[in-house]
Every structure is written in C-alpha cells, then in structure tokens.
Length: 219
Image 1 (tube, helix red, strand yellow):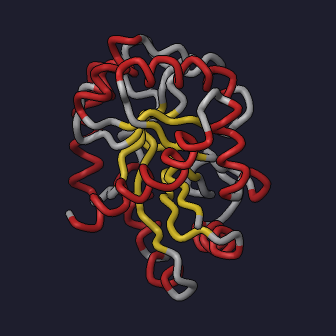
Image 2 (cartoon, rainbow, N blue to C red):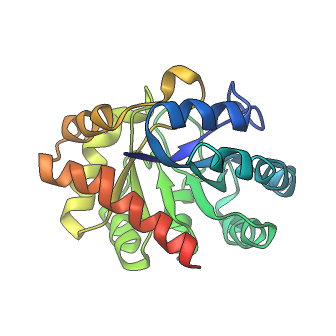
C-alpha cells in the first residue's frame, strides 16, 4: 500500500480539506499520508493545530495521517529556528521546500536543510550538489523524487547525486489537487523514470517511507 509524505490542503495552496484528502487517499489504498502544508512564521502553529483535529476521523478509514509542515521560502539562516518552532508546535514530519528550478527559493536552503537532522525530507531539491547530498546522507535527511510537474524535471539529477553518496530517497506526489494523488504503481514508474532500477524504486516507494513513519510513531 502507498505512503505519501508530502501533500497539501486548503490550509495552504491545496484544493481539499484535510479530511477530504484523507478520504481520497484511503480510497486509493494509501496506508499513511503526511499533510505538509506550506508553513512559515505566520501560520505554523495554526495549520498544525487545525490539521490535528482531523486525525481521529482519518483513522476511522484505517489511514495513518501524520501532521507536518513544508517550510517554504524561509531565509536560509533562519531555517533552523523554524524547524525547532515547528517541532515545538507538534509537527510530526518536517519537509523543507528545496531549491527547485521553477521557483525563487533562496540559495543555501538545500544546505541548511540537509545539515539539520530534525529535517525529515528535502523536497524537490533541484540541482542539489554532491556536497549537500552527502550531508543529507550523513544527517539522515531523505531526498525527494517528485511526481509534480516542473519540479520533477531534476529528478534524474537528484538520483545521480544520491546514488554517489548513498543518500536515501522517497517518492512523493506533492499533492495540491485530487488529480495529483498517485498510486503505488505510478510512484514506481516515477522512480524508474528518474533512473532507478526496479529494486531501487521499490525501496524508495515502500521501505523508506515506512521507516520514516515508524521513526515518527516510535518517537
């Protein structure tokens, strides 16, 4: 069954309420999702608090819904502060919006993220350097392979850098609309399209997200 650890709702720029996202994910045979709305200093406590209210309802459908954030357009030298603030507010998953090729993310964001062991996933990290990929491997930060259009254009580069340093990878959808949610079969195709073998793709789609969820649940 599918696990997707990067999804958005009406609490930021997504189209669905958290509970509708949860329902659609459950119907598409997801066992766990992370709601990771865009967050900064203005909204981090609010979105975590409000999303948590739907967790018991998602559990009624057998779905494990983790509450997280995607820290977005945070000045690189303030990222550690926002990670700590997010954790204090109750975020279970910390995703950092990486240096995509399609958005004006501040240079240095990738580096700040991969050097913070409290960051779980560096999302769509664009042309990440080998040095930053190595830091991700050293600090347990997982690099994202994404199915989102435009962000996915650098998936192949991310795979090449991750392979060289044995950094872990995960396939996420970065869902904003109901049409963005992907099946496990689609996730495997996304991974293989980025250059991974079948075995490597299955690790990214099955093993790595399960390990992240297990770590969160075991505290």
